[in-house]
Image (cartoon, rainbow, N blue to C red; front, side):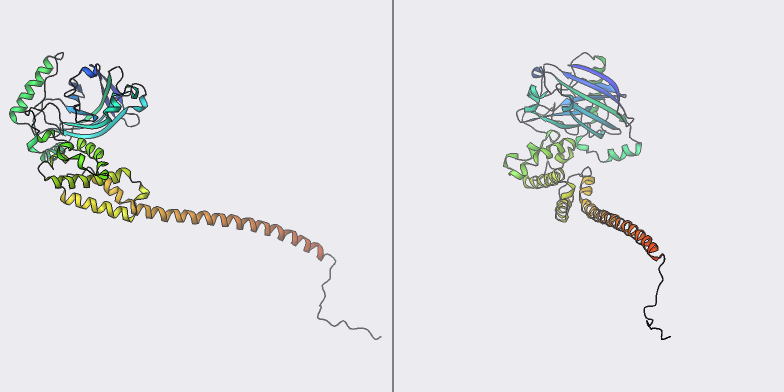
Length: 381
């Protein structure tokens, strides 16, 4: 695996990115159940890219950006704007890029996303895996959070997913060894805590820890109806970016989990497939009802989705305002046409008036007006 870094600047934004490129050769011969890059340093912090473990029950290719520094479970926060890219080696325009701004801390040490289906990835004609080689790129811009923000963020960090003091110490020792021996094979980071990471767990075989749960572990996806099955890709991606969705339901009953995720899927599907013009009163009422029940009863932390729902619900008023504005625009256009027509008629009348006036002046020359009411009479002498 070859590695490279470079400096870059986001055009038009003034954001300085530092780019790390991870070229994985002989991909089919790698241990794809725990495939990760060596730790790399960007803007003073250590990072690592991890590939979602490719196992029998996984049908998609996903990537994660992870904090690789040796850090305690609490008391630190890191705000990063980053882009993860799966480069297309045949057509650069088809490269898959996922970008986001996320807050890393003791409870959320990694963030990732779905990129392509495995069938697409393994097809060399698609350009993502060519000559058994794939190329992954990470572009980062990091800024520290203020103390207040950091404290607020740590206050909501789930304690059950943070490292213990012994784990932090062991992780620190492990990371120190990596710094001393850069050329050695990467050591395991089993003690790290991630937002959601199904890689390198220390549980016994057959045991699934809550940190490693996926949507497939929580729900019997095969039992879902056709409509509900359409929600699954949206839910899987939402769970990758927001692992608290899975953690909040790990102890819920089977039927409650089904209701909660199905309801969330309905909201995501509606937002994903609806156009602004579709948000009439009926659609807004349906979305409002779904959202209200989801927020009150699901137990999900949905602040990340709330702005999009509020925007969608605001579409009805916006559509009404748009309709009013369009009607006024049509009236203005109609009146402009009428005014133009009347101006033409006025110009024609003025021209006709001038011609008639001149004819009148000519006709009056040598003309004596008579009183037609006077008696004609006659003379006797």
